[in-house]
Length: 290
Image (tube, rainbow, N blue to C red):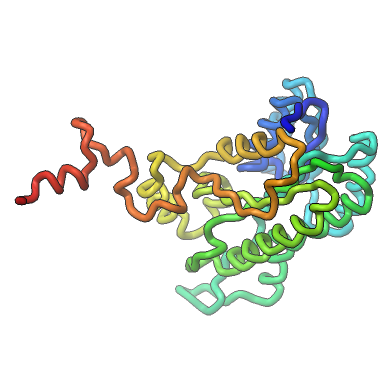
């Protein structure tokens, strides 16, 4: 059944930038109160007060904490805060959008040192395992009610090998596995769990990847919509999924990429269409002798 999101609560992990920021704003626009956790330096944290003002302009409450969302201590401190803010009702949406990990290669490459055990453990813990720990703590506290939506951000890198993405790719694989397991274990509570696979999206996290310019160029070339995915595209998908109390869409990796993942060649891109309405490949074929 479709439901109103007004006066419900959401918890956004990674709320100050990128997809987390866009989702916090989109849910606030629908009347949801926002609890956000972000982990920023003093310089980057300056962007949070304007974000809070923008959220509150929609007539909702916003409570942000600058802390490491993957820390057990932080979770222990925040769960009672969440209970108090929501009056014990809990959160209708939990978005896991933590993009903090190493970009070191597994083996020495181009003068870079190889990945260490500590870096790999940290990356997978933050970007994957922390989802499980948050769900465990919220369920134990009774703060994930029936109809709640647990959503986690993954990427196409879970099934591809890229020079600087090995540890993050491993984390995304683990995250998707956690999503499947949690979906089955939470089904009896009427809670759905899904991963959202965004297309290549211009965010601060993307720009930290050394090869990001190549990713952007490739994605822009093959996406049938003729553009990159935007954080707002992901936020709209979260709003759509949140607007139901059904738990029947669960355990999936849902593409939010404009069919970028499916498109293998640039021919689909509308930017390749000529002024007379013919795509470049069509124009080439008509010029060939029969």
